[in-house]
Amino acid sequence: MLCPLIFKGTIFDNFLKTLAKTNFVKILIFSFLTILLLCLSFPPADLGFLAWIALVPWFILIVTEERYVCLNALFIGTVFIFIQLSWLRHVTYIAWILLSLYCSAYFLGFAFCSRVIIFRLKLPLVVVAPFAWVALEYIRSFFLSGFPWFFIGHTQYQYLPVIQVSDITGVYGISFIIIMVNAGIVDLILYIAARRNTSNSSSLHRFPGRKFAFFGLACILPFVLLATILSYGFYWLNHYKPKEGPALCMVQGNIPQDVKFQSKEEDEISILKKYTDLSLGVKGKQIDLLVWPETMIPGLLNIDPELTGRKIDVLSQLTPIQLSQDLNTNLLLGGIALTLIGEEQIYFNSAYYYSKEGKLVDRYDKIHLVPFGEFTPLKKYLPFLAKLVPYEIGLTHGQRRALFRLDTSQHGSFVFGSSICYEDIVPSLIRKFKKDGADFMLNITNDGWFRNSAELDQHLAIMVFRAVENRFSMARAANTGISSFVGPDGAIYAKLSDSKGKYREISGTLVARIKLIEKYNPFYTICGDWFSILCVTASLIMLIMSIFKGRIVCQKVAKPR
Image 1 (cartoon, rainbow, N blue to C red):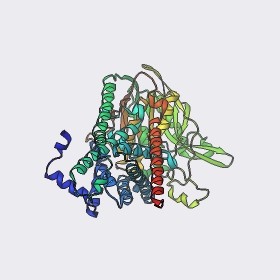
Image 2 (cartoon, helix red, strand yellow; image 1 turned 135 degrees about the horizontal axis):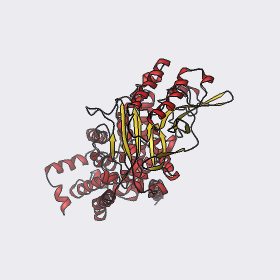
Image 3 (cartoon, rainbow, N blue to C red; image 1 turned 90 degrees about the vertical axis):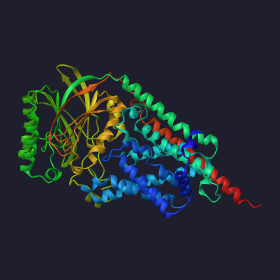
Image 4 (tube, rainbow, N blue to C red; image 1 turned 30 degrees about the vertical axis):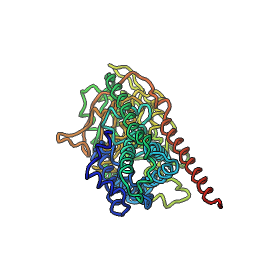
């Protein structure tokens, strides 16, 4: 057989002897190897191909070790997330630590559930691991408001043939196949190890996948599924023939967050002037829509300035009128909205849409707010939690998914929506915009909180999957970067950068056309997270069966002879 021949030799024999030993050094080496490979798979290193083997060392520990499995899972999860979340330190150290510990709990849950199912049901890792991993990723995407970040599938955003299946399964299908390949490699290694190791005391002899059927499954199934996914990806890309749509201009002012956050009136006027000057720099170009990032309009646009008595509100309301007329274009501007209900003041994080005539057409209020960033959960019952929020005031979530109509002189009329800040990482929200009839989506964001960090790259990588899942273009205007355009195929076909190739913490404008394909709702848009729900169901069934079987075994042992 070909596979065993590949693993012959002294090096592999020594590796098998190492596997058979239970010691602290082995656990430490395998743990740090997994952490290293995982970190390199995500931005900023961005070596996504390493994700296909990154979890192999940890999976070996889950199957072969008898002690410290859960503690080891917590260690790997905490260190990995802590390193990758290092950009959160620019905002709050407490949230950085707590969120790392929270996410590590999912690593613990995966190790525990996988191990119980594998040894009680005698199933190979290649069958159990993909379902359990995707189930936990899905739960993390919505539980406690959700944190759909650092999904293993996100590492593949640059590999277009791999990610096309997202229009059927969402990003979860990519995570599924990556975990299956990792698990298949582990099953193959441990199968050969169990066949060649003669030590009866070895923990490898407890490995449940020693039969030929399990070996064949481990060797063949992941690669058959991967070949199917790649075939679908290449087929879709070969038939991808986009047409040019409306021309958009993304304005990136690069306003440092400390300047914006604690700004005085002169600072606010300076911010407004910088964005206005950058916008006027594209005068004479044919542009259908000019876009400013999240909260870059410093004044209130929906309140009579006489009520506030602030100069910045007057200037802010005059700016879109003047800009739209000077540039002969529509505007989408990020700002704060204020609604007065009696003596109560309600604030929204909003996107304002202006026509070419300078008239306010409509407004979208952000629906999915960031907990401890834009509002404080349980603030009424636990007032001290308000200290974790960077804003003095809390924001209120919007109720309506606003769609804007864009009329162009050359390409007809279009309907688009706008997500704000992290809303583009929420698959269900973007999918609903597509079902509502959006031809393309925008994202306006201010990632200046996180400075020149990998957060900007990670955020863009996630947005790529929203475009593929719903088969429409997405364009982003970001205050400090990364302003960009993503096509329906997931390709980042335009990105703002300077002459030296720097694309974070720079200012400028990015003009490009939206790419359009024949409008339709792909399977994911219609059916949503059916695949991840299937994985949750399968994992629960396997876990319940394993617990039930464990009780039966205990009862048999407990019976007197």
